[in-house]
Image (cartoon, rainbow, N blue to C red; front, side, top):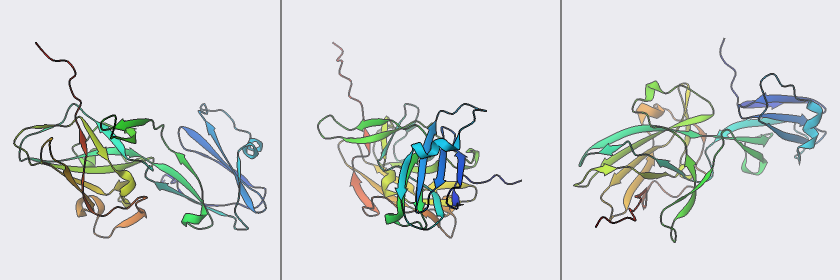
Length: 256
């Protein structure tokens, strides 16, 4: 039997409630006459029963007479920083690898419109980090993901999106990836086969003294011919940009 998706529509009449398990939390939903109670029950132990009467202790959203909620995935609101000490790309070589991006659960009233968004719930624990130098860097999320070299070996999991990353080392020295920022807030989310897949990240590295070019786009290999777009970019800035995409940790100790 096909596994039920954690996303989709919820149709509840006034007074009805439902509990949905999302792994790190259980979402309680209760319909009122013209609104919804939403409560996240965190760190629920296996076999632990939740009293649906406690849902009204959550946040109340007054949204109107529609009895329908839309539950849908989205990418995080801030860029994510991938840390690695195990990827080295030789000069003039191109590498494609994949990372797993933790997704956000969005809850909409009636229809999926920006003005109907009630709440967002991270489907994984995400921590903040800093990318760049202390004086001119930016706040981002830390990406706790290993890298994969083969798309087909990644197990389907609706709580994550697969992010294809292609880097061309257009420098005369080997590139050791230390910290790479992935601007997921500027990327599409696509349904392909049994996976959720982000836009493909295409980077050209020209050396530590130059800005690298980045492009976010689609690939037939990872997105199919007809793109089943699940979510549009939160912060679209154009398809091609010159950005600081790599950060290298300086060695503060000097050998004598």
